[in-house]
Length: 113
Image (cartoon, rainbow, N blue to C red; front, side):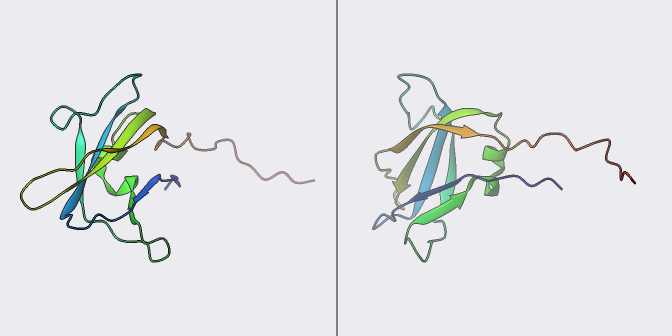
């Protein structure tokens, strides 16, 4: 099985949050995230890193993200509560996503002498 380097995303926990949404879209200059139109993944309440105290997700844990074609993406995270209220976007721009390894090595042989 190929080794694939994953991308991880971390953020500070939000008091009163019952979960988080990760919005993603291909980088387009001037693009604005939209609660209704931008694709998203509900990442619920991710594990907290014991050293940094931040919530951390690995992209490879979400099939929707691994299935994305290789490209450069803008990402945003929002917090939501039980009533469905959602926070403003915390954004990071121009993240290259590459989950496809190169082909296997061929022609391997042991040379004697």
